Length: 404
Ligand SMILES: Cc1cc2nc3c(=O)[nH]c(=O)nc-3n(C[C@H](O)[C@H](O)[C@H](O)COP(=O)(O)OP(=O)(O)OC[C@H]3O[C@@H](n4cnc5c(N)ncnc54)[C@H](O)[C@@H]3O)c2cc1C
Image (cartoon, rainbow, N blue to C red):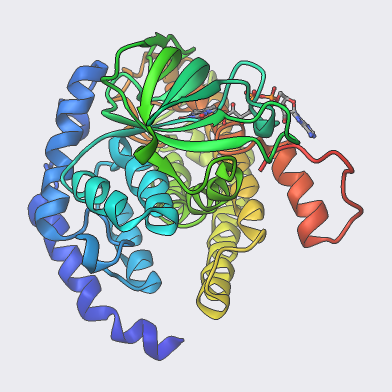
């Protein structure tokens, strides 16, 4: 393993050089207070830079325009992007980590040829899975699709659809057989967001921004040729989507949390004073908290190393990805909570950053509020703990399991 890591040094140097010459120096300050349209414009530009460099879809096969990078190369890329504080590639998250891998896994040759080049060229996708009464219990979804010749006619409502207002396509789960056991009657569709009958309403969040939406579907016609996998077999295709979502995308985020979150907070405390005028960094109680968080960041790093090693050995992400998800999201919240507690009123003066700039933007109060979503999206901490209990610890299974 050590030899393999040493062999990656030239690649690391190449990425580091690219970051030094391509990341705009003041991108965070220039994007302060940007609305979602400005966010999208900036991210489309950033996506094009990554595409030109071959870093846009590092985990995809070269045959479909990806980088074909090994997992260790992806780790290096994530580490270097975090090190250089590159903008996150957030606008394309669903396209690159959810839709693309699912199409690669379950798509026909025609579907791959139809959709994958578009993703590489910057098509934005959203994920229409959750509904008002189907989140953790995703298999309970009620959005109905009825076959009408060579189309499905879809009616229902999705919620929490991230960036639906920017998306050109949607990976959509619908119920095609209401009489079958709930996991057996679901079908996976690829829906054009310009289709008549779709209404997208943004949801205002506690941060004041609107990154996700309610998506209403009223007799939307989706061609049968846009069905991924067999009719009523959507649940199995969904497992590929969720496995991808929870796995590789955490590597870069964890490194950003260690650098911008934990180390960034330690740096910030040097400029903050408490009510007695003492610099926070000099306070032993603050030092104790910072030390603990740094140790936890390093523990997260080790958890990820174990996960990467297991993926290389076994060829897939196992249930320990749930351990990483719980630990990452709860550590993110602890770091941000510490920041607002130590920084006090000063953190309320921070200007909100570019949407989805990351959760370690240096605007600590904003990041604190934003961090709550992380123990919910992609599977709640409670559901992750159920998975850990059953699949890692081998505890008795819930006879009526919920979640993915
Ligand atoms: C930032 C963010 C982005 C998101 N983006 C998308 C998106 O793009 N597309 C999309 O489809 N969805 C998206 N979601 C939705 C997300 O997948 C759901 O919020 C999540 O699955 C939880 O579902 P719910 O909100 O309906 O909560 P519920 O499932 O109703 O859960 C409510 C509470 O009950 C607990 N609970 C539920 N079942 C169990 C159980 N069996 N055991 C123990 N506790 C349980 C939960 O942990 C939670 O605390 C996003 C969410 C967030 C926060």
